[in-house]
Amino acid sequence: MAKTIFMIHGMCTGGWVWQNYREFFEDKGYQCITPTLRFHDISHDDNPDPHLGTTSLLDYIDDLEKEIRSLGEKPIVMGHSMGGLLAQMLGSRGLAKALVLLTPAPPAGIWILKPSLLKASLSGLKQWGFWRKPLCQTFNELVYATLHLMTPAEQKEIYSRFVYESGQASCEIGFWFLDSKKASKVDRVKITCPVLAIAGAQDRTIPSSVALQVARRYKSVSTYRELPDHAHWVVGKPGWQEITGYICDWLDKVKIDKGE
Picture 1: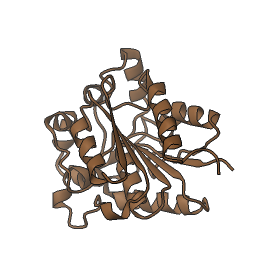
Picture 2 (picture 1 turned 90 degrees about the vertical axis):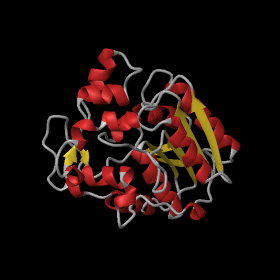
Picture 3 (picture 1 turned 60 degrees about the vertical axis):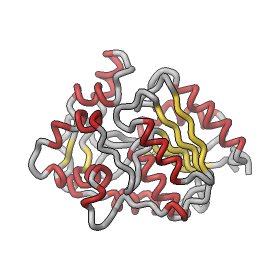
C-alpha cells in the first residue's frame, strides 16, 4: 500500500497550491491528500465568512487532526508557511510519520516579526481590531513578500487565487507573546519523527534565519536545507522540481518511502 502525504497549505491559499507537488509524488507512488482549511474554499472576489476573523490555529488543527485520524495510519505531513506550523503541531500530537516543513512559520518562542514581514503586512496592521478580522494582503504586499522571484504574469495569476486569512490565527503566530492560550505553542519533546526543514535564502515572509531556528528546535531528528535561489513560494516557483526531488531522496534516506 502506498504511503500517504498529507499536505497543508499556508495563509490565504488552499489545497490548489500543491498541484505540482501532488503530481510529482503521485507519480512516485505516493497517495497525496490536500485539504483546504476551513473558510478558505472561496474565490478571490468572494466576501470572507464572518467567522474567519476569529478562527484560531487550534480550530484549524482540530479539523486536520480529525481528517488524519480517519486515515487509519500516520501520514507524512508536509506543510508550507503557516501549514508548516500546523504540521509541527500535528507532529507534537503524534500524528505524523515524518514532517516536511517548507519555509515554515515558527511556533511560539521564535520571533517572526522581522522588518520585511511587517512591511508585507502593513495594510492589515493599520486596521483597528485586525486581530479579529479577516485579512488579505494587497497585490504589492504579496509580490514584495512572496512572489518577487516570479514573472509579472505569474504574480497576477497567483494573486487572483488568494483569499482572506484569519486575523486571530495571524496574531497567534506573530504576537504569540500576547496570546494567553499560546495557540502556536509546540512541545518540541513530543516531536520524535524525522523532520526536514527547507528555507529560501531570499524569503521575505519567513526569513531563512527563522526557518533555521525551527529546525534547531528539533535538532536531534531534523535536517535543514537552505536554497539560495528560492524565496517563500517554494510550492510553485520554477525550479520546484529541485525541492521535490530532494524531499523524495530525504524520505528514502530516513526510511520513509513509498513502500510498506
